[in-house]
Amino acid sequence: MRVLLVEDEPSLRKVVKLNLELEKYEVIEAEDGLIAKEKLDNEYFDLVILDLMLPHINGLDILEFLRLKKSDTPVIITSAKDTSTDRIKGLKSGADDYLTKPFEIEELLLRIQNLLSRRPDTNIESTPDKYSFGVNTVDFSTFSGTHKGESFILKRKEVQLLKLLINKKNEVVSRQDILKLVWGYDVFPSTRTIDNFIASLRKHFEEDPRHPKHIHSIRGVGYRFTEE
Image (spheres, rainbow, N blue to C red):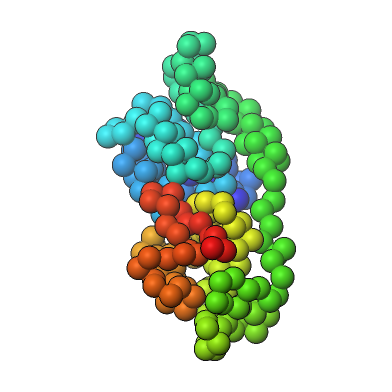
């Protein structure tokens, strides 16, 4: 599981990271709000541990940015602000849990396990091997497609990306879900790489790639597939 640890205090960040790694989590660090925002915009995380008082961009603004991207990534706020008003504000802003500093590492680990255990698995395998839409057909088992009867071969990532979008048709698929489900946890493309694959799919399947009927961009969020 990949965890983004957003904390500007070096000693606390070091202790939390060490204990998470001992529990076999992969920990990515962000020491300020700008770094955190960049990480969240370009990578997938299973969970975020988020301090509120950060340099450059505060934690609540980071949380708002994440939720505007339609991301359902669990977020645990860790903060020295310990009033009920602060906790309510954090939870209303979209946090899944709120832990007041100083805290016991064991309690943090238990809260992480609790949040991750609630997450449903995302399945992209329900799309049939052969699928038709508009003037197009695609055979996922042979990595091939046709557009107005003209045949072509698709790359593996094109097939995986198209299958994900079709399986979630009419829904917006976030960049985070694309990163997780198409590229996996180990190697992450840049945002531009995803855009290039989308452009390639449009060249294959859209009559006018500049005005797509099937593969739509949702600015700042992700992509949506529609049959018409």
